[in-house]
Amino acid sequence: MNHLNPKHDHFFGYRGGFFALDPETGDEYEPDLPTRREVCPRCHGEGVHDHPAFNGFTGEEMREMGDDFRENYISGVYDVTCTECSGRNVVNVTNLDALSPSDLAILDECARERNRDAAIERAERLAGC
Ligand SMILES: [Zn+2]
Image: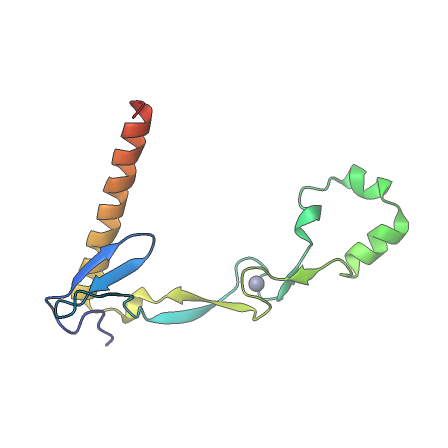
């Protein structure tokens, strides 16, 4: 069982990413979250995908580009290495199953904090702050 926080007096928070404070040194550090590999959602494990410039091409536009272009396109000439997994076909995702219940509670608390902050920010923006 992985533990985010072997010393329970460490403080965890969320600020664009989880962080923890070492109570002895006061240093912030990134807790090691257990990860597992998942097939990349961007390229579905292909390691490559269409060039982003072609996203949203309609069939009509494709025809206008001509047969050569279409053939090249289909054969993958314009494919680029996947921006998500850099061609590794898999990405690391946080493995919540590997966390102890107490660590999950900490992550939960952090997520709530983050949502609350986001809600406050939204409210302030609406109020014109
Ligand atoms: Zn990918």
